[in-house]
Image 1 (spheres, helix red, strand yellow):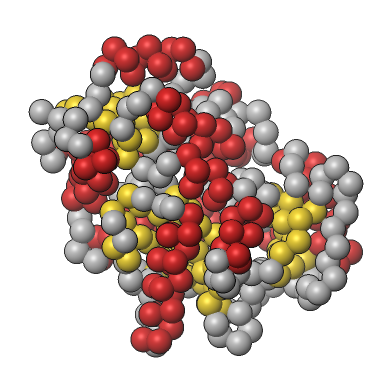
Image 2 (tube, helix red, strand yellow):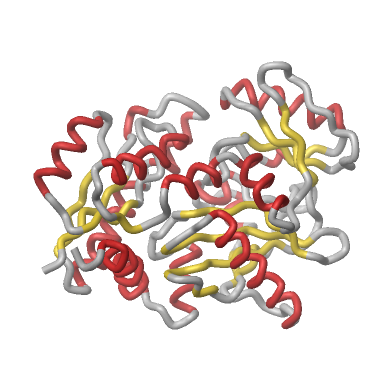
Length: 336
């Protein structure tokens, strides 16, 4: 029987930054680990749930004792630091343990939103224009950008640091918000043009299988910006949770637009060297043309998360999705 260690983050009380409600996001690690392990067991694998913990030596010792055929890596942080997600994948490479999920390079590039945008733009792909607000100098040159703007931490994911106040209607407001965000998150920020159009996400699986686009169907009260905030993702029953339903698949999408979305998603996947599973977020500009917002390698793989729901709508049930991702790792391992 093929042996799979399901590696997940269990940050618990180690969280040290952001608002106290931040644990609403990171405490999901053990739940994801259980779901993935259960799906693997139902598909005939022997699955072991392995928390990352907070000590590298303990983690290495446990993996060496288990000696799994592969690791299914759903670890999104280490010691509460999302920037260490890529380093966990690097550790698996150093230990020469084949693993399911994206490699450290793709994870690292995607985590740095500015570097990711530079890569995508350099590949000729359309992105929302941006400037970097430096935490060191508390400045950013916004020449060439017109409001409204959106301000976001440079190196976070899961909508961390995003609230209704992140959308700013003037240069002064954006610079003040960037200074505040930078101080809270202890890093640079992006000040980015806030695109006015529809928002989509497109999943890519296995070896370049592109799922049909899904859409964030904004139904928010007047006065609130159309934005997937932290509350929208993590605070059940909040105004933003209720006002950001996801249509899977997206409705009333012209075939030309659907093809553009699929093509851009696949191009972004290839530009970052993604593998196994990723989600690409896109939004329409004022002319109705799609631009890439972000690339998300190793997005939430819970059964009720968008990627799994989109896969199921495309005829790939959850257990088959998880087994298919694991099989990608086994193929790279050469049947180890």
